[in-house]
Amino acid sequence: MVGRKKRLLIKIGSSTLTQGHKKISRGKIEDIAEQLQKLQKEYDIILVSSGAVAAARQFVDLAGGPSIEVKQALAAIGQMHLMRIYQEIFRDYDLNCAQCLLTYYDFDNQESRINMTNTINTLLDNGYIPIINENDTVATAEIQFGDNDKLAALTSELMDVNLLLLVTDTEGLFTKDPKEYGDAQIIKEIFELDSHISGMSDSKSTLGSGGMKSKLQSAQIAQSAGIETWIISGLKQNFLINAMNGESKFTKILTHS
Image 1 (cartoon, rainbow, N blue to C red):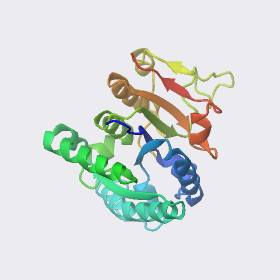
Image 2 (image 1 turned 180 degrees about the horizontal axis):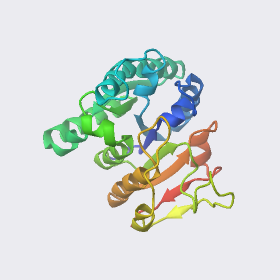
Image 3 (image 1 turned 120 degrees about the vertical axis):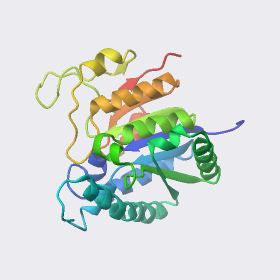
């Protein structure tokens, strides 16, 4: 489309939204909103947000332990609270947002892909920020084994975004585990992903369902579509603007083009 803004897709993980605690941090969402207000002048923004289960756990403690049914029920409860928090805070920053709940199956159906594309395009054209999350209440396999990293990558490909940001609780990919080795160095740029993925563990954050391996696999999907991916930490204030201005450390996954 002639004159279209660049498109930026930002995936926010639970570890960022909770700042390492058990509750959604309204202060962190305020930080995100303030930055999106600035970025929206140059970019159309799509947000993929985890955090529904974490939001529910602030209010309820369902019986039944860690079963998939309990996680699905928590997701159903928490999604309403999560979106209410986003809406209230975004409104204070003159940001309009809309909820889109998807499953990976939607990407396999051509009619669903067309409908998703048309809906998200219409929202963007009218100044809305689509906030996308997986429809965990029906996506049994994904809530048990998956995460929103792949959903973000597939959405990036579908919506032809210019840049994918995977926001997590680490600054990117390191030569060693920085929690165990003081001499670990951040890898600033990656082109060939296979060797890094094959040697990567499946370790995950406390509240999130994805780990670094998942992020690299998702970046590989984006890379195949010609989309650059950045893995950045969301723990500090102004983390998006700092990354865009080159004022923070993070890992870039470069494209073939």
